[in-house]
Image (cartoon, rainbow, N blue to C red; front, side, top):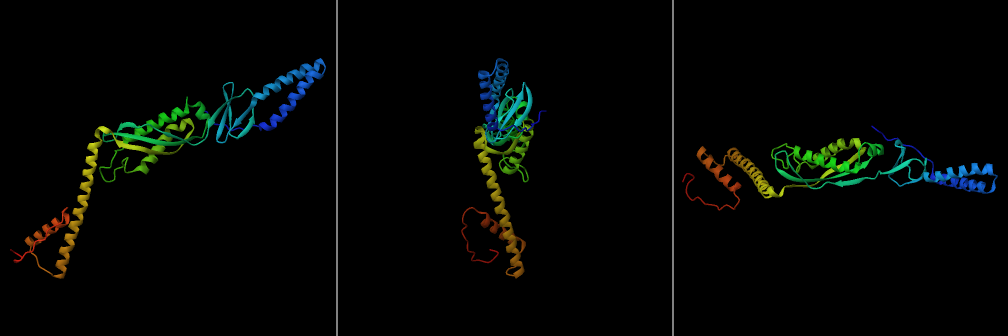
Length: 285
C-alpha cells in the first residue's frame, strides 16, 4: 500500500531569479565567447531551458503528487509557486472539504417494507498517495461506496419503531447518522478519504405503500393516545375511591363500587362531553 510522503520543494521565486540569470549568461557566452566555451555555454543554455519546465503552482488546500517515470516521489502541500525536477509529472489532488449527495435509493428495510432513502456525505482527501494509486477514480469510488453503505444500513433497521427500545431509521436519526459515517469511513479507508459527516437527507416509504403506511402510523398514534388516556383514567378512579374510603364520605358495596368505576371510566375516556343524569331516588334505585 502506497502511503503519502510529504516533501518540501524550493520556492519558485528564488529559482526564477537563478534560472533567469543563468539563461542570460549562457546565451551571452554562446554569442561572445570562443568556440570551445560556446559549446559548453550552449549545453548550459539547453539545461537551463529544460529547468524552466520544473515550475508548478499549488493553491491553498491542494496537493501535488509527483512521479518520476512512474515511480511515486512525494507530495508537496506548500501553497505558492514551487520548483522541482522538470522530469517529474505532477497531478493535482484537492484537499478541500466536499459534499456528496446520493440519489434516492429504493430499498427494503429490515421488515421488508420498500422505502426511499438518500444521504449527504461530507468528506475530504487526507492521503493523496492512496487517493491517486489505491483506487482508479477516488471521486467515483466515494460515490459508489457511499451509496452501497446507505443501502446496507437501510436494510439493517426498520423505517419506523414498532417496539419499545427498537432502533429505527426515522426515530434514531443521530445514532443512524453516526453508524452511517463509521460504515462509509471503513469502506473509504483504502482511498485515503476521511468522512467528516454523514446523515440521511431523504427518508420516506415507497409511493406504492405510502398511503397504507400512513394509515398504519395514524392507527398506531391513536392506539398510543388511547392507552395514555385509559392509564390516566384508571389512576384517577383509583384516587377517587381511595379518597372516598379514607374520608368516610360513603360506604359502597362491590356492586355500587363497580358501577361507580364504570361511570367514571366512561366520563374520563369518552371523546364527547358527557350529559349528567340526576338520580332523584335512592342510591339503589
